[in-house]
Length: 154
View 1 (cartoon, rainbow, N blue to C red):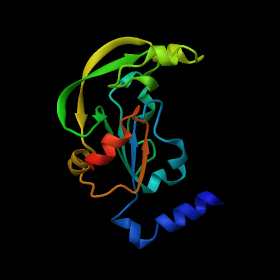
View 2: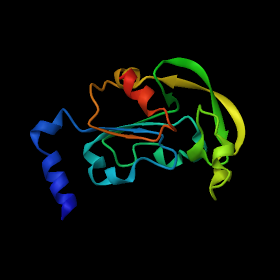
View 3: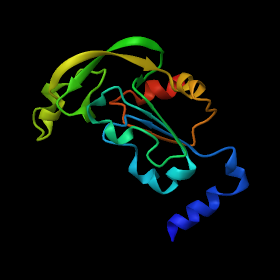
View 4: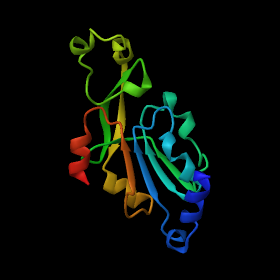
């Protein structure tokens, strides 16, 4: 029943040329699941440079359009920045994990650095323009503590 309401609202003429734009910063493990009911009527822009667990985000995955950008979102566009690859792809970051602060937690091992990579970084504004998008309707961010820098850049 709820899905029918979303479909009815998003099928209105107001959304035909202006579908909702959903942005997922840090899409490792798949695009933000709560968006599934409106995926078919929406455009998604998903980011994550660590492709070890990005398979769920490949292709349109039920979205009207879905763009997966293999880059980190930061406050500047750069061809390559240092990126710490951790045991869990969901914990990889440009910030080196503070193992001393994590040591007391059961999940500390997920943050163990297993390597580094040079990955591109992009501003939200740049990515939106590259994909012909003018706005963000919903933003989900898992940016490992860089949220403020990202917000300042847009």
